[in-house]
Amino acid sequence: MVTLSELPGSRIESDYETNPTCAYEIRKATHNRENVLDLLELFWRKARQAHIVCDVDMSSVERQRAKLLASNYHLTVTSFVLKAICMAQVSHPISRTMRLPFGRLFTLNSIVAGFTVERIVKGEPVVFFGKIENPHNKPLIEIAEELKQYSDAPIEQVSELRRQRQFTGLNWFLRRFIFVLGIFCPPIRLTCNSATFGLSSLGALGVEMVLGPSVCTSVFGLGLVESRPVVRNGKIEIRPIMTVSLNYDNNIMDNEQAVRFLSDVRELLEDGLDENE
Image (cartoon, rainbow, N blue to C red; front, side, top):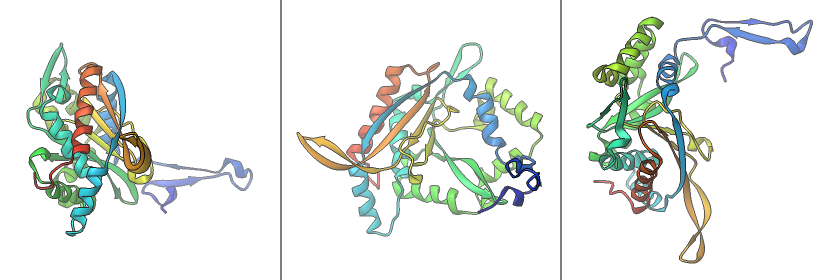
């Protein structure tokens, strides 16, 4: 466990001896979270956020995971969900459409999965944005390997993480200026954030439902896969169930479009994904 006083640039200010209830610590904020804060400041506040939630029967996914584990392939639930979302995005272009000023919209033709990954930088947990291009055309095992690189490989060896570290080191004004240009110019925006959707997975930490901030038109949240009673063919059965949320920008997607999109994702997961597909 790292205390605040052990972090770079920190100092302790305390009046503990005269008043124990006034003990506190002050430290200088680092730039490590600026990549997240910039996106939230410039894109999240502009979105008209709406949320829908559904429960997904993960029985098929769990069977496939067990089958692959028997062959020494450990695949996380995230691998399956990323592929299912990308497959659904093929037939739901509105889910990968962005808004530009002056009433213009642009749709991304190359599907890119975006997801959050937490790494420790100088003793401090830092959230990065990872991306995988065209997961719908890749085997599940390959997707899992790319995810593992983001979570395990040294930051300097992962180009996307290294680039974000360099970007957060830029002057505050320059960073914001680049993002503002991206609001008007799609090529610049794609340089900053090329993901066609976002995914936040905190289920492994025991959270039942996650509502991620809307930095893309579509942002998914994955909860814990847990055994729950469900009714199947008039009988109560225990199934592995996961709650999936979709946070979407109502400026672009209406409620019916969002429901159809999420329903297709659920159907793909429940029907099963071919690990070699």
